Image 1 (cartoon, helix red, strand yellow):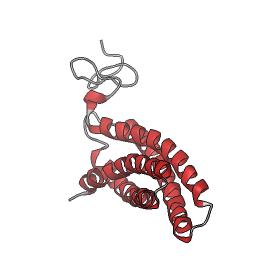
Image 2 (cartoon, one colour; image 1 turned 180 degrees about the vertical axis):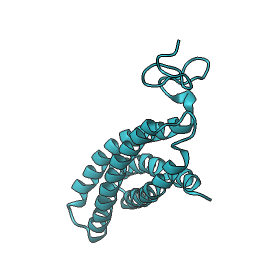
Image 3 (tube, helix red, strand yellow; image 1 turned 135 degrees about the vertical axis):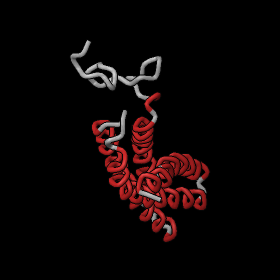
Image 4 (spheres, helix red, strand yellow; image 1 turned 90 degrees about the horizontal axis):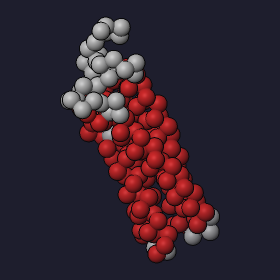
Length: 169
């Protein structure tokens, strides 16, 4: 198993874990249920760990695919930039989740505030999760790129179809 394969195995959980964690945490807050909140916090912590694994395998995956036809360095760079922001958000959410779990266990009133902060951060993270997932999918799935044509060819940013040299008629 190479880094590209490992990256594809681990990169889905940070996205899915963040989405599920957000829904579960909101449910826990509405129901005022400590167990449900704890499940959400654990999901966020696991999502942050998988985010770290994804970042760790991303560089190796990049090396394996960046020179493949129809991939290119620009689309990988965009994915990498979004992933770095998403990973940072996951690390922050994971940290506040640990803090919130501590407050919850010790019955410290600040947990109400930290849980709301985690919800806000998770909402932002879900936005980035969608962007990261889409940009990652576009690396190998050219059909979902915004510049895909009806016949499945992908145009370069300059508008020339891939495989053509710019300026050729």
